[in-house]
Length: 70
Image (spheres, rainbow, N blue to C red):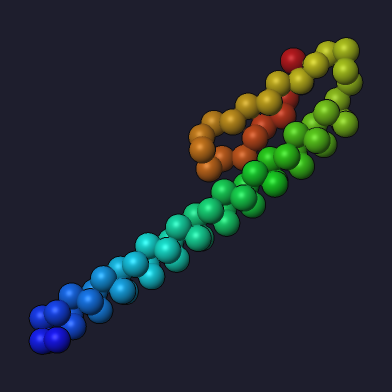
């Protein structure tokens, strides 16, 4: 292998590791947000009266859910 091939291989390996790391961190954060949202929704339905009802809102992909009375 010449130096150009070694450099290309090194860049490919480092790039792949970087992509996998960022992907893993993103998936982990999505999982944590999902669990937090489930807990918020569960507490929302436990704490509010069933007659009036509740509204669950979410402003954006990364934002937590918001629980409000109707």
